[in-house]
Image (spheres, rainbow, N blue to C red):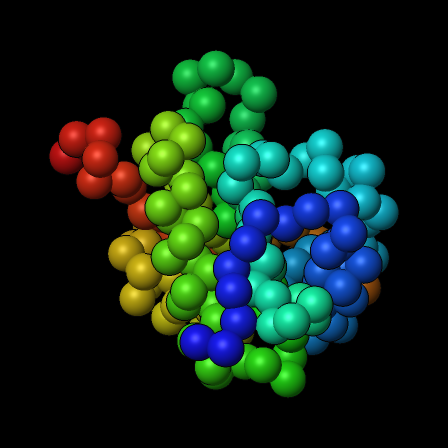
Length: 166
């Protein structure tokens, strides 16, 4: 591994935002049509569970958790976001980021991680399955793209082995 995984800081956002925009432009990574500015992104993601893969000072990818609800009973459930620079796909960066994000989530009391992935994004589905996620089902016409097209998502989840949920 010729990169390190470290906490995402505000100074990483411009490069991370560029990677997010690459994902938006694929049409298979998110319903969003534009990336937010740092302040908005910062407020919507859990500070203790956001990381970057850095090669020298270049961000190769990032992963983060956002809360699924403000209700206290869901405080241990997080939604995974993971994005890799397109010219670095297939190099194991996603696997290393997701494994580290899982470790951080468990250190911070999360018992369930979930991901909603477009069915066409088979690489991301495989990444999550290889890291212990299971497919829960398909959410049909879950959201609408800016083009007006309705999209399905595959819902995956991973339960922490540390909290004893069976």
